Amino acid sequence: MDDARLQPAGLNVIQLQRLEEHVRRGQLVGPDMLLQAAYEHLDEARTARNSFTEVELELAESIVHRLDRVVSEWDTFSPTQQAWLRGAMRYFSVSDDEVPDFVAGGFRDDLEVLNACLRYVRRDDLVLYA
Image (cartoon, rainbow, N blue to C red; front, top):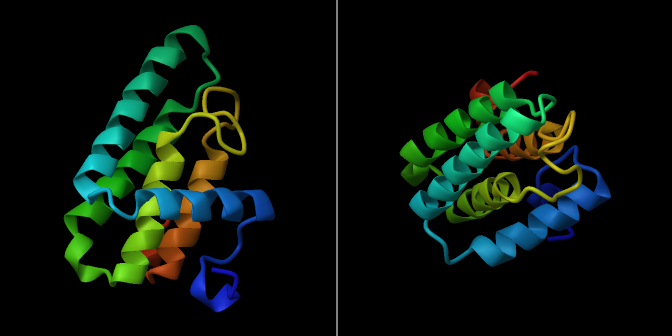
């Protein structure tokens, strides 16, 4: 996945490496299971917000709503596009990524990864602005 034309653009090296790892690990996981994991992570964010007010819960909710929309349109994406979208869902569902999710700004890297993948699959209409 080293050819820049074959991967989402605009990510830093760490984000891209982690995303590629999530793509590899998620290739046999169905989109419904990945979406379920995203909703579970959102529930964890809601719980964390009780102790850590800096958790950006609204951003996490917006990300999950976009992921839900992607899954509802899953069959419109090519297998390569689906692979990157699987990676984005897995990236979101893991708390300890480039920036831990439950600190101030913790979902910003998740947003950057999702947006890069949405642009890659030519769904700029779903890109989120925070």
